[in-house]
Length: 479
Ligand SMILES: Cc1cc2nc3c(=O)[nH]c(=O)nc-3n(C[C@H](O)[C@H](O)[C@H](O)COP(=O)(O)OP(=O)(O)OC[C@H]3O[C@@H](n4cnc5c(N)ncnc54)[C@H](O)[C@@H]3O)c2cc1C
Image 1 (cartoon, rainbow, N blue to C red):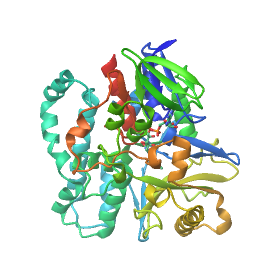
Image 2: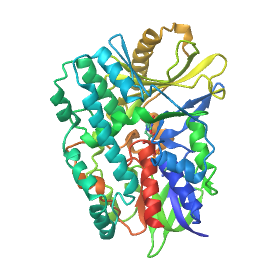
Image 3: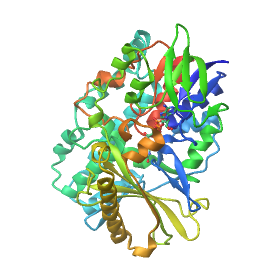
Image 4: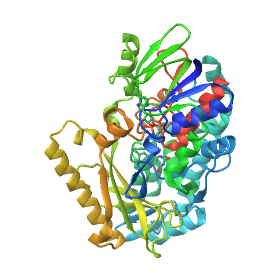
């Protein structure tokens, strides 16, 4: 059979693209290397508990935003709970609740950091965020794939686009400087929030992406059943998924492609690949594609992050009402940022919170170079050192005893290589930076006609909502 589309990778990008295209009547074959769907938004089961493997939060659920549109269009069977506060930042004995309601958030900030015009600053962030969403939800051809769509990009919503363009060249810090903020804790909270949303700090993150990232906790939800429920709900809408089918080679023909796996060959008129940019070099034989996907080409992989993960269960506590915490701490050994992100299973989620215990996923930014290609003993020692540091801090912040921590496991960039096949275990996408050429964001490249790329190393992908938006835009372009 010759499919209309072969999709490579059943992460959030591949699942959403395949389900939406099938919904439009196309024949789609989804090939996934792992045994289950989800990729970085996947899960694993141990000792009767279901752990989120990477991503834990869902955003972009307000009307017109990517996940809301996906859920409505595919009629996904999901039980979502809005989480408010979206994040609790814990810093120097302060707990700062990132409330959804603008007034409550201003009051919370004023309580901890008086004499700053929070209302003005955050109204401005919210205005930029709104413009960002207007552009992304009304202009459905980004990144542009033809002159025709470039022209429509320039003519459509021109005033909003013109007003927003300078915010691609200006950093979040340039705006903060106007407010004379002398509270280091406040700046650190903003920095670490940016690291988990834009993958960069305030000095480099463009104001547009920064404002969208800083406002994302206002639109955060928990999926009952965790990421397993989220990814499986989309997978159910894809009739042809082959798991344990790692793509080994892609052979382009004049009007079609052969895609080879160890289990067999597949043919399609179009291929949509959602694996990281640099993974493609080894999938093609010809030099043209190898050059296109070379690591010397942009985006530079050395600028990208991987993650260190700790998974465990802790006793449920009636006092612990919040689900997502960003705990600030001194430099974590073998990691780079000064915080770690803690996600808890919802206490009412009976499929995950059971036996009086809550499931915990902890993540923090780390460089692949700290973990790959090193001696096994050193690797093991580093892993212990990093997880001990995080667990000691967690015990202090959550008032836990040693024996409260059970089912403890860790993950490193090596784990991401094993379970997601991502080049060097790099996750989270390309850090947004004012140093990058904005044309890289806007123009979609590909070495072949009818070969398309999606996912979090392609614009607009960063986080689940953004990779889904990329899929929705490609579906729109192809139909
Ligand atoms: C620790 C962590 C926490 C995060 N937290 C959040 C969060 O809370 N909220 C949020 O929105 N985002 C979060 N993100 C980001 C988000 O998870 C990702 O940006 C998004 O899931 C990426 O989806 P993707 O489809 O582009 O790629 P992936 O999820 O990597 O999917 C690619 C798929 O391709 C498969 N694959 C690879 N090579 C091959 C091959 N040769 N053949 C066949 N299949 C192949 C992989 O197995 C994988 O399933 C987080 C990421 C990490 C790592």
